Picture 1 (cartoon, rainbow, N blue to C red):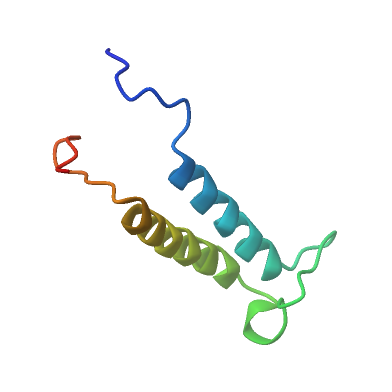
Picture 2 (picture 1 turned 90 degrees about the vertical axis):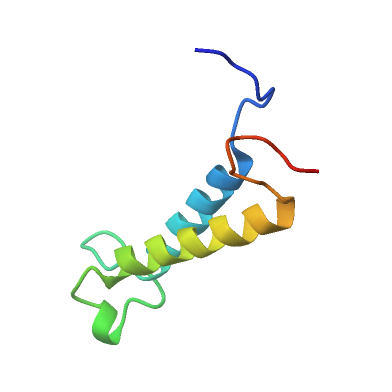
Length: 78
């Protein structure tokens, strides 16, 4: 296995994950924590997990576009 990127972390991935966690907590309702938006249809189900996934996916797409990352064979076409 060859290490060629020169970066220790995928910052787009870490940032997207943190955004997803925050969104998930906002819609989470449990015995020890209740998010500010965990009311109505979000009170007694797991739709917060779906929203967290969607927020992470959207953040990943946006951050990838902003940073100009090309995933075509790992080669940047600049």
